[in-house]
Image 1: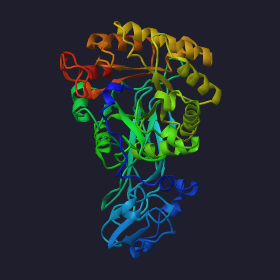
Image 2 (image 1 turned 135 degrees about the vertical axis):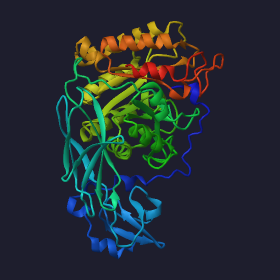
Image 3 (image 1 turned 30 degrees about the vertical axis):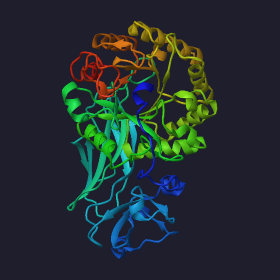
Image 4 (image 1 turned 180 degrees about the vertical axis):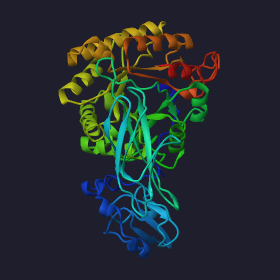
Length: 481
């Protein structure tokens, strides 16, 4: 995707603040620690014994290392090289010795039930002294409860919401644990519509403050790009920025605080990708799970391109089988695959991807095509023709009706000038949006918010569209999807 625009990026992994792959995947036992283990005793916290390798640490256990105190936030058996300051995914620094202070974060939030107007949640108890739990949507407190479940009502039909649960006591609130759910009642042949979500890339193109763009345009969601390998099967933003604590995490927190949601895009045209680096579907799914746990997205988008993933059928199958595991473990997170197309629909590699997803039983929510870089002169008609070709490929693979096929389809365009100098004006993008709405498509994106600024005659560059427009005009149109 976006070859000319990304050619100058140096996607290097050196110095990335990442956790060893084995540490983040840990073990099956660590992924499902019982509440009793998570509630490490106050005595164990107070003692804060020195950290040692080869010791199993429960969530909430405190240790000392080089004179500093740390608290375990993911159960694991320690290894040399996993010293607390080196693995922030496993340990957080604390102060106050044996004073437990605010409680630990709630664990394993999940959606337990939905109706057309409500979402029910549950989670495991937080460690420490807990007075109760607050459920937030963005910065708004939607519920305060004393137990480990809540139901949020008065919601719209077929709407997606991300909630963050925090434990609290007199000392303050815990870190949050997030979960995303969608109310029932979606129509249009079986898919469920996602909010318009243009791509936002925090490592390139003078990225804007997302909350400011939301305020100016009404957009409620962004597709955050790109998750790559930082070495082996370990995910990182651009292969070098950490999943938490960096500019990407700060942008996502700002989006959620403003009441929005995020889609997380893996892969893209270039860079060191997870598909070729993760040796098995299980390993690939584990890497994706690390991102889901860190970010709490409503959607995960797999931008499968180029010879290393799209045209390599071993890797294509590895990704598809991995996505089957991802969906099984995260039924309320939508799974999207995004790939290139010809003017008349998917090429042989795209048709193979669709047919193989059916053969392998992969529950993909949306197949999104990128209908540009054809070198054509009528991007609206090319987009419609390519989309109708996608519909035909889906119908042939699954035996779906037109309505059901459209409900599993998306369009990811390119605003202003494309790599091949195709022109998409705001008026044309409005046409494409309205056609997508009229047919019941369920995803609309474009590359990229970074470029949604005027620079007539500026060419194909990272921080503007190359055409005359108003600031954030394409984002405002996309918000109307």
